[in-house]
Length: 206
Image 1 (cartoon, rainbow, N blue to C red):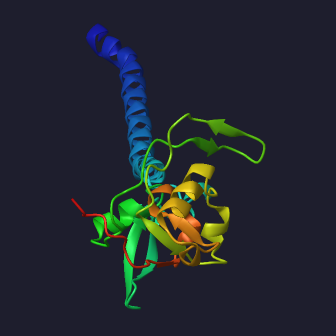
Image 2: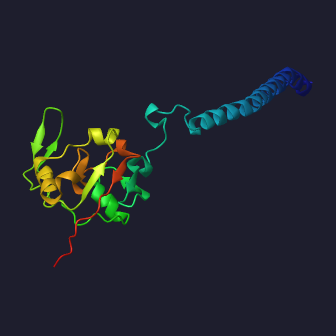
Image 3: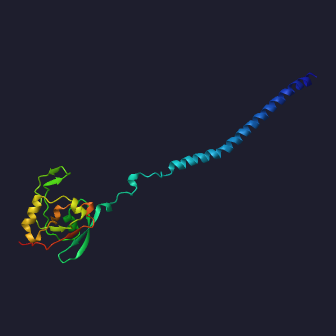
């Protein structure tokens, strides 16, 4: 009897423990299901964040609206007319002299008159003296197209250039458009400029 009574007294306790274990198991199952259900959503959200971070920005700086800089932005086309009237279009780089552009493209202008520049116009109020001898001869005489915007903004002929033109050429061969090619610097506004090359002076006399 004592044994039966003791077993009977422990039976409710065993049932409580079993019930508690079942309840805990149910809780764990529910938590696991909720975690499993929320995992794909969290994974998708993480993937969306990573994709957004990796995607290139659609906002483009205004300085690049016209595309990246190109070497062709520094090339202009110049039309050369020889004494026979034949025309030839040659490329010229902005910043080089007209003589250098002609020389690179096989246009004979005679010997270069180039020397270190006498001065350089830096602004409308400042001309920097460079103390060079300037033009040293007047063989590379050309006529630049009047009214061309690039010619209008080009640095004007210095006194030494004018003296060399007058010393090497007759008065009826000199015009307001007369320049020495080695003293003319190409600028971007000279695109389409026409240059007339007069008959060459004989420069190969021994």
